[in-house]
Image 1 (cartoon, rainbow, N blue to C red):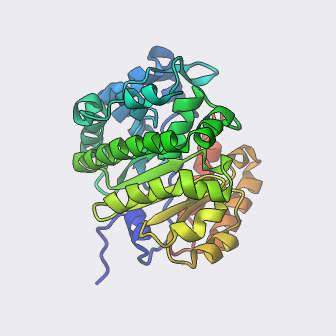
Image 2: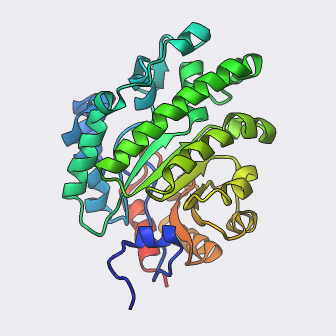
Length: 342
């Protein structure tokens, strides 16, 4: 007898047979939704993250309005540096800003990785609240940034196309860099374990800036730390790893017992299947800018993506987070095309 109770998203992560691929969208809780913009104009970014009622409301918006197959808790990867004692601001039309970035040994030594339960309690409360409100068939995804990506912000002090300051910090002081990465890894494992205890059904690790490293540097400064997190958590819940711009790491990631691997739009489905040996569920990978395409073009591209990845071991998604100003109707077209796929 078929197990009809397992949500589609979790079935796909387990590699079980599905009637169609599940769909969710990175950054689905916000940015493009009018109701989210209303809250954005009322409350600043971290107030929204730190108020469980608001985080819950925002998480549920795309489920109610777009009808996706999984929810992702509304939060931010930079709650981790905040919990370590770093003051992170979110500036309008600029992004994250850290006035006093980590630049030397005493900065690294002074980072406090204890009391996660207390410091990030608002996230765990938001998870519990959201789980109560979500329909039973909609799983909740928890997430964190990869240690490398978190280091990038902590050392650079803001977003960057090259993260030159962060990279030179690591190359000049590799020992110190590893000390910092170890601290971030440790607090991240603790944080994600508590998120799992609070009720998330799966965890995604965002290595948004892995792509700024060469393959050999990636294997030194990013991959081992993501593997450490995966090794600590994979027995508890399914883990999805999203290494943006790192097609060169697909083969390695397919062998460590993670459940899913996010693919960005720079890698074809065929290459991703080949490099992963079809060992792992793949997730992705429509270019988020393509949601601005005319309706017929969008339907055609979505169907092409589905045909290329195939129905099994696949979760439909974008290749990166949804962009602000994306037309809500186009998001619905994207999702409906996937839901009607056969």
